Length: 102
Image 1: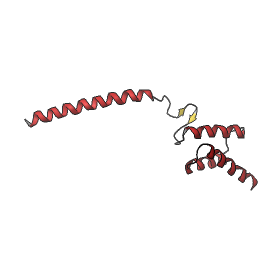
Image 2: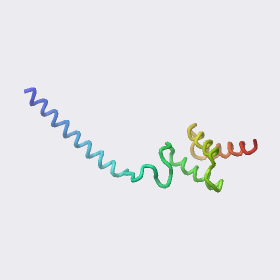
Image 3: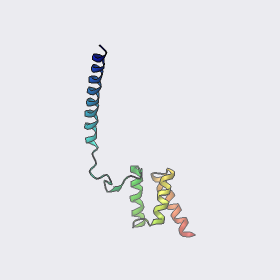
Image 4: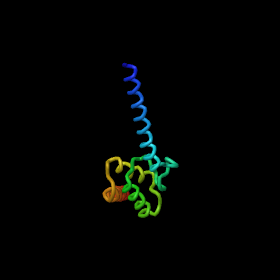
């Protein structure tokens, strides 16, 4: 009797595993990433939000070039501190101007 109960339990668990796999597989196809290092021509893996990428592009436009190593260090430091959006851009420009005067 116990063997039959265990058998039914295993069958139910297998059915649930298969059901959950199918649900997860369908969902994962929506978000399939071909190259995990490139997402819409932006760096990923830094934990950046969309508005951080937008501000990074604005910085490139303002500077007219890619940020130097020191500027990039300042930018990444601000991102790690939790700044994003217009606040990130404003703080970055303030720090860069302050460093130019010194």
